[in-house]
Amino acid sequence: MTFWEHLDELRSVLIKSLVAWLVASIAVFCFKEPLFDLIFRPLEQGQRLINIDVTAQFFTHVQVSLCVGFVIALPLMVAWLYGFVAPALYRNEKRYSVIFVLSSLILFAAGVALNYFLIFPLSFHMLSTYQVSNIVVNQISLTSYISLLLVLSIFLGLMFEIPVLTWLLAKLGILRREHLKCYRGHVFVAILIIAAVITPTGDPFTLLIVTLPIYLLYELSILIIPPK
Image (cartoon, rainbow, N blue to C red; front, side, top):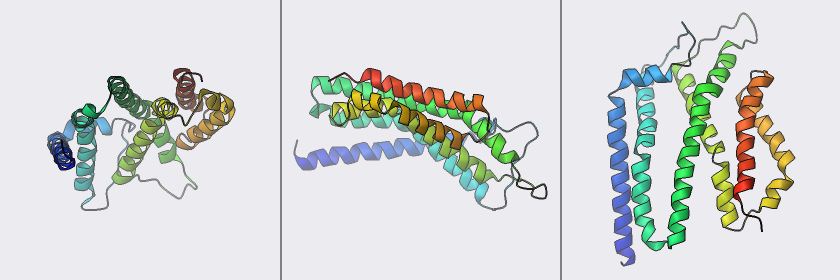
């Protein structure tokens, strides 16, 4: 195939991916009730959110639908992109790329699940009940709630990509197992600080629950990198 033929094929892949994303987002948009029941489940009994912007609820619905639609369409998008790239790869490169993509998706989903079931409820409870003074009453807005949920979900999902990222850097010859072993202590302290920031509850048990999975992923990174 010529360069322009490759470019046309790539354009076709991108267009199909955008259409799949749009269709999935529209489908998600149509199921508002179960979607937001799931999103608002971390709220405590009787807790309510407020809205002061006339367009905020609609655009929040659109924003959430686009995010969830992207997640639903992502496997198809990755499959089409892989079909475009695969002819240029050697057999072992195809095997590694499949492992890399599947591992990335699984780990990202695990990070999002950890945030939804543990980190976000704890963080939201602490932050929504924190007061600098009794004369200041917390009234949590819808946009603030959704933003915190999305940001923490993306952050934890990316943090869970540590093993595949280190494996890729090792394959490229940028990183070695000895480097990771050497900076174990520094990394543990850094993870502890990050965990303290995203879970400001002051509870050592909660801090440990957040820190431990991320640090174990770092140790897994050391194991999967072959020694030089």
